Length: 140
Image (cartoon, rainbow, N blue to C red):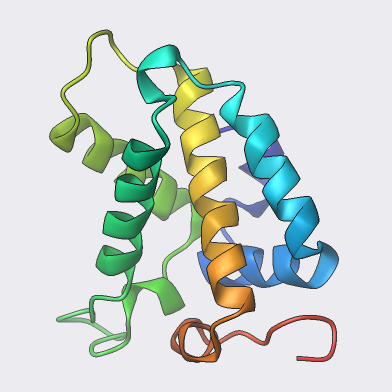
């Protein structure tokens, strides 16, 4: 996990997304995603691949938890940032056929792009914000 996320590792993923929405405009998020894309290994430069990864992860995060104290809640509303990072890494390792082993810089960039992509989607999607149990924008 990139050092910039270490302080937020134990926070809910959804709370980190909410902070991004509150503190950053959609245009700034897009510019940040583009800057993160520069850190990707060439095998990950395909925008369709990144979109497929983000779509798959978003679908998985909306899956309800089947047991435990959070039974029935969508994963996205309870998962911690660190837990999601580890799951994201495992999903990529299991499902991607890579030319070379994934480097940490590319993994961190892909996760950061994923996090900010969800922030963009959530900023304009009230249903997703409700699923995440967050408010949108400065005025909620």
